[in-house]
Length: 539
Image (cartoon, rainbow, N blue to C red; front, side, top):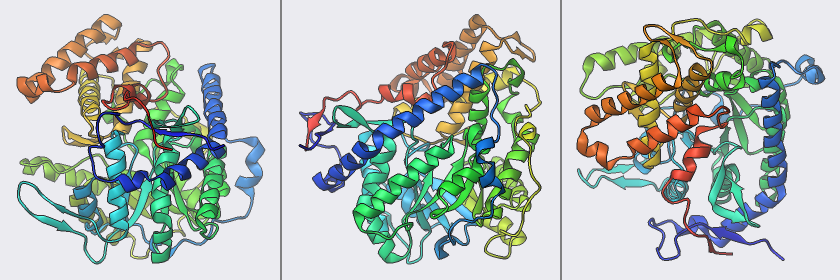
């Protein structure tokens, strides 16, 4: 007897988008098979995370694992890099939205990472139309006609290599249930993408390639490897043809880079410096330590010693094992109508990319197509070859990775965190997962920094320059003041039509909790407009 698969759509309404083939009975059955086989082990891995965090809250600190020292000391390497991923000097990232996808693939970047995670609000429409857009892009059939200008957007003959990032292991897809339980969001995203596209990509010699986010332990990398082996078997594909890049964006993962590559040594192509989530994870992991309270977000830059050590260790780990080391995202973006602001942003991007290539990175991320030539110019000047796997930095110690950064904590930092947190959450609740705010591209990762930094400051009674000790009454007053500022910025009409009050209430509630949820999106997800719809059985 087969387990039932149910899809959470409204009984009375048809799907508000045209992509029913993405949710065919065969595709859903494929996701069901993955869920039944791997869902229980995933729950055990998530429980391991909770146990680890409880230890950190008691004063334990992350460290290199003694039981895996033989892996770090052994002689081994990852499988040879595929030709399409030998040169990754500039990678563009963003959601799988149709116009963005076309512009990104045509941008001149070596890779486009289509993101179902930090830059996408997971409404059913966003998820399924995103899958449809990828299906058409893989086959060179994606087009878009702008309804206002009438301009037709088409894919060029030569486009960036496509990579896809599913959602993290911690998220569930509440629109789909198997045996009465929500499907893991990562299996929904990867299952649909690979079911529809893996054989086509393999036949074309350009994939399938994945980015795997927010891993915290090498056993999670092992779990992913088993999932991908099973998918290869089910689809009749060669073992190891699904190639991966793992993001090192959690503090615990920084101590297990070697082990994570080793677990996926037959398919791993590299590691990525997910700096924004890494800063968030640093705060979250050490949240109970009053000596680990961070300064303003603006002061937590890549020149800080703990982030320098993190970058150095990633490059060293990758290059010792024949894998690519990918730099992180510079959040600065061009500012429409502000030539001086754009010039400052481009200068900051150039400086950031110059530091990365000098550190030994083989490529980097940008968040806007206009930044592709800027980053490419820097890497071309410093890295004439396809990569620099020969560059192996010196070893890094645990103490260097755990060094708390120095810098001021200010009223301006408090206001920035509140403005970014509220405005980003409002955008996310409205279905948009990445948004340019105050000259920076904000996504879930940067919003998480704002949330956890405010929680840390409030719960440890941090002293803020020009304000004094932050307590609940003072904090609430600044929330109200920030709402007033946002209303003045966007106008009364936009403010009234938006979800700013709901976003502010959610953010304040989470910050006032004595024990914060592991991820902002776990709470915010329940407020998305379509997740409370009744389930409709389709298989």
